[in-house]
Length: 387
Image (tube, rainbow, N blue to C red; front, side):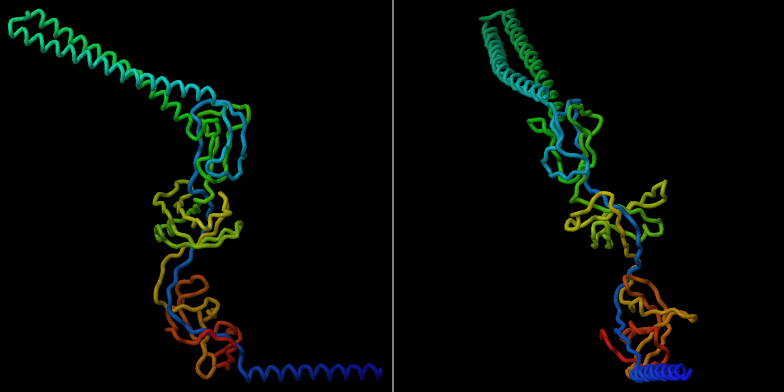
C-alpha cells in the first residue's frame, strides 16, 4: 500500500512539472507575439470566374468519299488509329475505272485533234468558196459572167460554210461529252492514287472506317472519317446569364485532367442562337497548337471564363478574409507589431484573390497566415513578410 502511494505521488509531481514547463513556454511565446505572415495590400485587376465543363473536339473533320460502288481489296488502318496526311487507308479495285478514264482522255484528245484538223481544212474551203463568189461577181460586173454563175458561186459558199459549221459542231459536242466523262471520272478518283489507294487528306485519328477487304464501298457513306489531332477546339454550353458577358477573343483557362493539360486559351466563337433542347448557348474555344498534342476528341475539359473585370481595385488573398457574426473582417499589423481587426466589404472573388470594396485602401500590412489565432491588440511576431 505504501509503495502504491509513493508511485502515485511521483507520477503527480512529474505531470505537474510538465504542465509547468508548457505554461512557461506559452507565456514565453505570448510575450514574443503570435507568429504571423503578412503581405502589403495592393491594387490590381480582378475578374469573376465562371467554371463550366466542356468537351474536346476536332476543329477539322474530313470524310473521304468514293463516287463509285467498287470492291475493296485491302485495308491498312482501323478506327482509332492515328494517320498522317498522304497515308494509305485502303486499296480499291480501280482497274476498270482507270481504264475508262484513259479511254475518255484519249477519245477527247483524238476529238480535239480532229477538230483542229477539220477546222483548218474546212476553213480553207470556205475561204476559197468566198473568193470564188467575189471573183464571179467581178466578172459579172464586167459582163463576163452571168447572174446564174454568180448565184451558183454564192450557193457553193453557203454550202461550204454550213458544212464546216455542222462538222465542227459535231466534233465540239463529242469533245464536250468526253470532257464531262473525264470530269465525272476525276471526281470519283479524288483522294485515290493511280494504284487505287485511298489517301488520308489530313493528319489525325480515324474516327470511322466503312471499308473491309473483299467488300464493296458505297457512294452513300464515307470510306473513312478523319479528325485532326492538331487543329483542336473545346465545345462548351453556357447559360443565358453567362453568354451575354462573353466575347470572341476573350481569355479562358482550361484544365484537361485526363491529358495532364492546363493552359490559357481564347474564345473562338460565341453562338447567339439558343439550343431549343438544352436552352443553352454554344461557345467554342480554340486550343493553342502547342497544347494540342495528346488531346483526343471527347475528352472532358474544365473551362474557366473571366467576366466583369475590375481594374485598379484593392485586392487581398482570399484566405486572409474571415467571416464572423458581424460580417467579414481581416487583421492588419501596425508599426508596433500589434494586430487590429478591420471590418471589410468584399466584391469579386478571383483566382486566389478577393476584391475589397471598403475597409482597406492599399499599403496596409495584412496578416495572411496566423490570423485565426489573433484578436484585437494581440502582439504578433512577423516570421515571414512579402513586403
